Length: 214
Image (cartoon, rainbow, N blue to C red; front, side):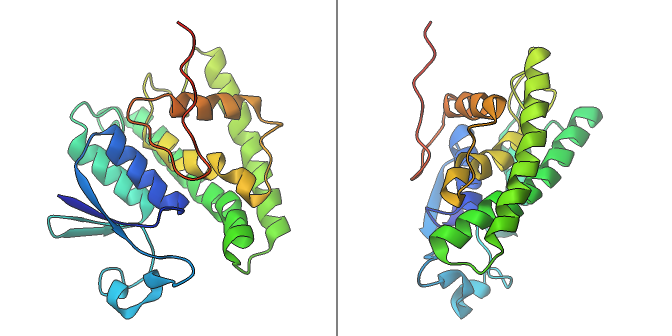
């Protein structure tokens, strides 16, 4: 069984928990107290990940760190239909890869602002917030154009991909970093679509939404 070294309030850990749930993969959560004890920086944890970062998975002895690498691995191993990580479609796979890179930016801005406010990290809060708004404007416009094409997700696919999982927590938790989503209606609709997916799980600050009327 997969072990996920996890912190409940971590956006990056939430990405892994979401995909594990949506893929219905049995797993064990191993809590790591990120704050205030900073167990991820302990000597014991650094034997698992010398970089001292979470999340980390242990899949029968295979150790993998980095949230987005974990998403790709889980999708490739546990999604037989290859919808979440479309390795059979080079163009679509390239799109997904580009949005995973984009998600590194939302983590470094929106999630960093949240770390400043909630966990006392010494980042430039105003710069993080401004950077997040710049990226959110790009993403909101992109999602709006996707909707005009009859598509619901970040990549040009009929189903969500790991790109959606990589971006969702950074966006959904952005209000905790002082980043309002009021001016991003397409982005709000996209987050609600994810919150209605089968297997969706919540976390503090992110709740399921009611199903659409039939």
